[in-house]
Length: 297
Image (tube, rainbow, N blue to C red; front, side):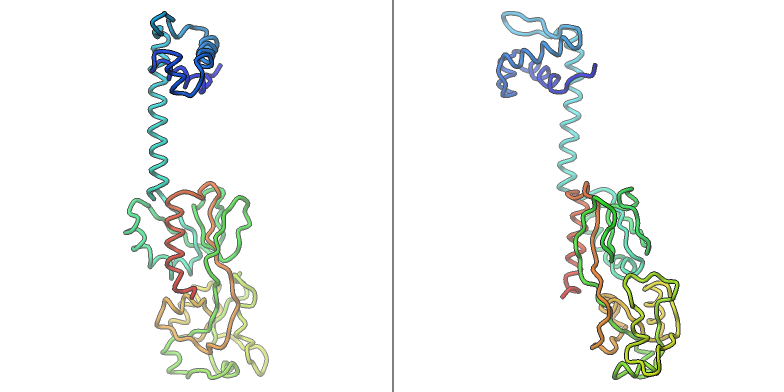
């Protein structure tokens, strides 16, 4: 029969105090209640744990053995409890962060130096992929996503609105000129999502139709990821629709036709419920919110 932890705790207190009365004072229990608990433990173990004398209680040989073991167990539990409390207060330990390739490469990676300098006891791993990881299976601790989580028991924190704008490289604009109106895009090279891509929002290729006079425009290049579109636009190949944070991060790009407004997506910080109060999760979440604040304005 397994030992009852409550009875073991009472036994340990009695052995420390040397009497039922003093142990009862420590445990906030009556003397009779303490005595009953010890008697019940002795009965379940089938052996006496104390010699009962008028002057007090003396541990039997079996009682000494149990007390030594219980004392070590309670000391270890107290140590673990202290460590858990410290861990909750001081951010430390491994932190695996999942993000899209674009946001992770352009925004997150460049800020990791500041984060690891601020929290040197957190061991960060960035997992960059445009597919959704399974947080419930701990494929990552947290995820930054542009779609709400579909898995149950996940906490989501809204980070910002992801706004799409039109950008081009200065070299491209020097060669092809700055479009003055949407219809001028008929004369320009446009980089878009490929037909086999899975864009995060519908109609991200709206630039092919915006102001077009002779039907849908033909793109100069199709790419299956937003990061690929970014690199093509940076190279001076053509104009493309990119998230606004990319334009702000990469000062080399020029916004084209700023009156045009593309789709908007919500970005979320997602993590399992059981990690809600974990110090390293809270530290990273607050850091991201701090760094996104200028972009959200």
